Image (cartoon, rainbow, N blue to C red; front, side, top):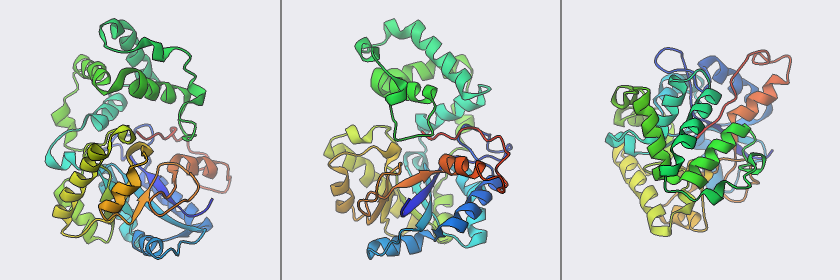
Length: 326
């Protein structure tokens, strides 16, 4: 597959951190690392970054990456990495560090806490959409001719319902109308945002501790827009520069790495990265390696699928939910 990063988001321990669509346990994380270490040259983020800076990445060089600044990563994955002396990239969006409970993660937590599975949530979501869509300001022509099988085809781990939901969220509703539906659902199901937000994101203390343990903390925007590639140059620059300023103030060091929220980029993105002094950055799909600012990543769900085909692997017979990231 060529040099790439392994991409992780959510982890669970069934105590502090609930099992969600896409989450893995600490044991599964260990198994995934073992599996990759047998097949690739699994190296630390510091070494991977150095090799990228010097145009020396080899075909089998692979690193570990995390997106979204999630507390479950710090609590569950970091101890495993520290034990193995394997530094990783932790890409953080920073508005939660300043105390804002960003709705992207709040909504995700809600749909896994309040519903037995993701398809039950989708059923409830689209029922409310149909009931309320006449009062929403949307272009209903966008609904016509939608084929879920052709949307976001680069993300093979999405189910048809995942694709439909994301299409309606991004293309039909847009942010403001999507928020209206989701906020209505939070109220309907009595979801307490402030109570649950406390266990979702890392704060300044955890960010500093990641850096002190040799991990590389990088940019992932300030507010995590799901379609950042639709932003103009100045708005996109503001998202990343704000993130950089907050992280560098917390870490006390320069930040030189990044990943793109939802893989959403445009013709300005690489130039913005260069302007901000970013030397290595990752996409969210296994696109061919083009530059050190567009390094591909393999989602852990695809790795698990490969592991399940191997009868000799410990994860083979486990019934792991289909992992999906936002």
